[in-house]
Structures are given as structure tokens and as C-alpha cells.
Image (cartoon, rainbow, N blue to C red; front, side, top):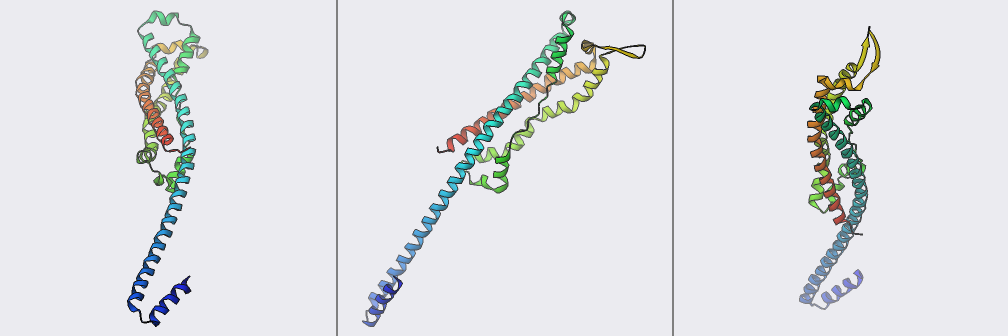
Length: 241
């Protein structure tokens, strides 16, 4: 093809047709430029198609990860709801000594154990962390989704600050109430009674801790759930099945 165009140029020059030669040369340059632009356009199209394909695969993997994490979060919220409700029951008992006296030690014990459920939340973040570390998160088309994913780690940390606060306080309080539940006669431990904790100031402070701090934590946990469900909705919107 190049030899063909060169032959045409040579013929025009040999015939002295300079004007036609210049027009032809300009036309040839234009054709070359058009060819380059078409090649670049095809290359960009192929690149964009590849990026879109990679984005779709990432979104599908991310969808599975987010779904799993929402399920785990719901388990945590459910246990924290039980804990909060138990703390509420204990608070009502502090106002009703007669109801407390009638309560079986085993029921009191079950309520106590239920209140002490302090689940931590450790979501799977393999796909998300890989996207952030590799910079693939920047390839996401949806800007809102990109922002929510980039800030999710900080949101989770903030959400469970109350859980960590309970964790820091409860061990010391539990230890104190544990010792107070023993019946000691002549220096010997005769038996252990859960209900002896009722009048212990440390136990009452423990109940307040699980009541007030847990309530605040649950509010944030539900907000996190809503955020993660919104993230899932955005992912679903971007996936082209």
C-alpha cells in the first residue's frame, strides 16, 4: 500500500503537477491521521470494555462479601438486643424487690449471662481491602458507592466503640460481683449464689453500663446496617447480569 501511494506521488511530480501533488499529499496525511484516530478509538474501546468487565467481576465478588457481612452484623445486633433487654429487666427488678425475691436463682443466672453477651464484629474485608490497596476502587463508575466503600472501615470502627467501652469496663465489674456471690463461712466457700449480686453496687453499675451504653451502641449498629444495605443496593444497580 505504501509503495502504491509513493508511485502516485512520483508520477505527479514527474508530470509537473505540483498543485495536485500537494493536494494529494495533504489528503494522504489526513488519511493517516484518521487511521491513527480510528486505531486509538478502537484501543480505547477495548480498554474501556476490559475495565468494565473487571468492574463487573469485582462488583459481583463484593456483593457476596457485603451480603455475608450484613448477615453477620444482624447476628451481632440480635445478641446485643437480647443483652439490652436483659439489662432492662434487671433495672425493673431494682424497683420491685418482691419480684426479685420470688425469682428463681436459675432464672436470674440466665438473665445475667444473656446480659453479658458482648459480641464483637469482624466482617470479611478481603475483596474490599484488595480493591483499595490495588487502586481498583478508583475504577468504580458510581461515585457514591466509591465513597461509601472507602469510608466503611472508619464507620465500622466508630460503630463499635460502645462495644469496646463495655469490654473495657465489664471484666473488672464482673470480678467484683463474682466474689460477692460466694457464701463464706469460717473462711471457707460454702456455696455460690447468683442472686447475691442484686444488692452489689458494682452489679448495679454493670447493669447501667449494659443499659445505657448498649442502647447507644445499638443505635449506631442499626445505622451501620442501613449503610451496608444501601451499599448493597448500589452494587446491585451497577451489576449488569
